[in-house]
Length: 432
Ligand code: GDP
Ligand code: IMO
Ligand code: MG
Image (tube, rainbow, N blue to C red; front, side):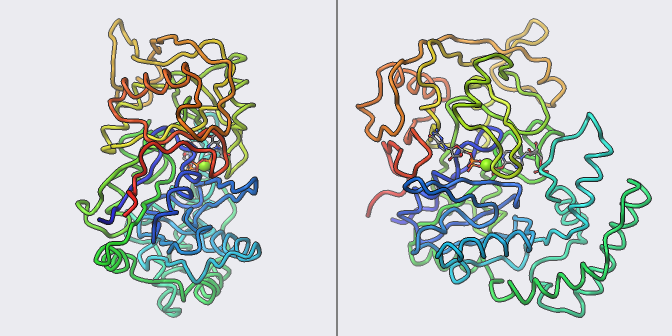
């Protein structure tokens, strides 16, 4: 029996999705990205060799895997070309295995300029976006004026639509933000060159998925960002501009929701966040600095330092519900090695009340005070352990407690960045 498995982050991104997707695609025929864009940075480490992917799905290092970019993804063609060139320079056949949905909105240089101009104007209230044009590109999609990938193939009509759109962006840039306009002719010429470079990769991803399902193929749906950055359910307005939750796997790729069999929620053994916004369990002390240093917590896309804090079961509970998480993958357990005590946030206190689910809205969340349960840490190293029985008893107790608090089994544990530094208790793609 074939499976369609969604693998997504259930915190604020950077949970280690890329590593897990790469590992699990061993048993897959295809992997699909369904939302986000090159704001994502997914790190794969194989035998010590590191690859960071932004748009290309994390199955690309497995020669048998087809990589699909679904309609829900906003695509920056220059970034995609650079990524494909880098992969091919490293000897990985990428273009022959990649398909881009004709319905993907294109990120233009003026989207990037708008993203950065908006952030600059917000000053201290900035969201801390990746500055990649993601928000403005999704705005144009919702406003029904986006240039979609398939349109690049019709140069004449594309040129006039691009002129009109960039003209509108330039009005906003100059009149609203006192920023420099973008060159219209350059934008049109870019679209023509993107068509030449990527046109042959444009296809019907939904049909491809239907065919894969008919042939009982295993397919993995790769989330970007994390549930707490979801445009509707995250810490709005400090969120990204797409739905990052499991429902988007269907709408963002072109598959019926009942085809999806399992949802694996990837979750760090602690929490990190890049950019602004409330973070109840954030640590400002030496423990936070220790986690950042030991976990190498710097953004894979922007290189910004990631804020670090204790595990938050309150937001994780909500994320498990939002995504129908049926299986947990806990990553970076090794980063907690050697700490004498660990804290787990089991509730929030606000205005004398105790909450076991997060309140809506960033402002209220910012006023929540975490309620901690203190558990003992372990002295031994868990780094690179691949068998559950070899974990120190207190590390197992920590995982059991997370399982209890979230009501979802921990089926995978990651103990290092390398593909093989992993304990798999139950594989989401059963061996046939
Ligand atoms: P993603 O965006 O969810 O794919 O995650 P990122 O790649 O942005 O960030 C995760 C970082 O943690 C990367 O540098 C990974 O190589 C690293 N990593 C993943 N799993 C583990 C783990 O279990 N232990 C350690 N120490 N590092 C890990
Ligand atoms: P992966 O897939 C962590 C954050 C940004 C910012 C907010 C909005 O690697 O987990 P955007 O550029 O999307 O408009 O920025 O979302 N953000 C991420 N944080 N991991 C990511 O992706 C992120 N993608 C966006 O830092 O706070
Ligand atoms: Mg990342």
